Image (cartoon, rainbow, N blue to C red; front, side, top):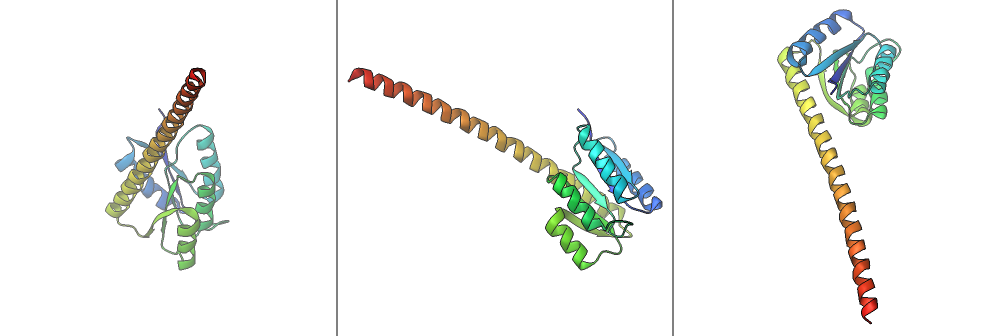
Length: 170
């Protein structure tokens, strides 16, 4: 089975390098860490990952970037993959940007720069845990729906059999 991917987007190389190192040290055995230096690269990487069958449970994005703000980028990702959670990691977010990300992009949490490495790792761990729990719930709900449909079919078949027998007895 393929590893899931954490995608990080920031226009500062040093931030991406630090972020990737911290995430690899904490989650590298279970997750691939992908980075993108601008929104266009992030969108391309995301589309490629999805086409290749990778799950992307979490996206970490800066707010102020060339071409597109972080809330807009996260909204796009949410429209493409509603189960993907997002973290905005920035020192320059506006209240409007955070509100937009919460309302339209399934923002899990906002973390100001410079970040506390322990806080970042704890937040990412909890976001991944939340994602995994949501996926398990969705899977169990699908199983229950299938079981319910099977039971309804069995009831219909049994009812038909009983009705047929009753008609023949009359």
